[in-house]
Length: 79
Image (cartoon, rainbow, N blue to C red; front, side):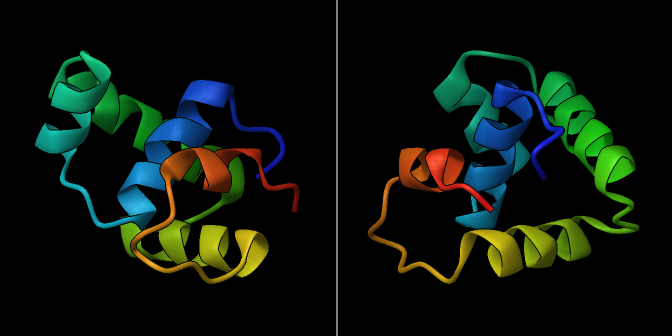
């Protein structure tokens, strides 16, 4: 996941926390289509075939986390 842009990592960390594209878009002040684009780009870069597989890859590399952890902690954790 190291080849992801900081924004792709940020979006992915929010996806991994269970947020919807609409909620992520609202939180980051971007469109839902932009969120979907970041997810698609992350999937292409990692070879993930589904959003769920992308999240599983992120969790495997970043480690398990509880829902109380901030997304920033996920984004900065090195794989």
